[in-house]
Image (tube, rainbow, N blue to C red; front, side, top):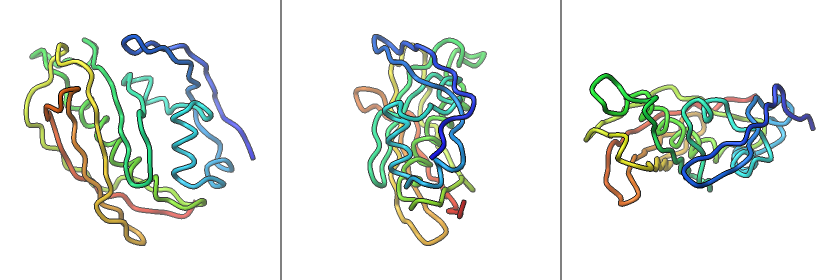
Length: 173
């Protein structure tokens, strides 16, 4: 099995949680050899590098299991729009990650999935003071080619900020 390409080790701090993570791209042989759940589990515990999008948006996979994924992040001032609320791209990225990873967790070795459609409903504004957010993605239906998921974005108290649906297409690597 191969290793990683472009590995860059960084120490990050999210709230009071410190962790060391590599950021980079995993080589194709490693990806093909692992089931989706194995692959994502290794990313979660830093046995494989974190996708660079995690560093860019400062969020992380908190939980992964078959058909379900949870991502968490605390948006900083860097993600605010001119009105002082969190930009929709941050919200969409968190939900896309959670929903797509819930679908990917069902992929057998040698396959992967990609997002082909996503719909997000923003139900209330998010401010910097809103605190830590949790995006949960769950598989609704897994067919041979298409996987549909749903997700929600809430704070630590369960207050809903956004929800959505997604369709992913499974493909052979």
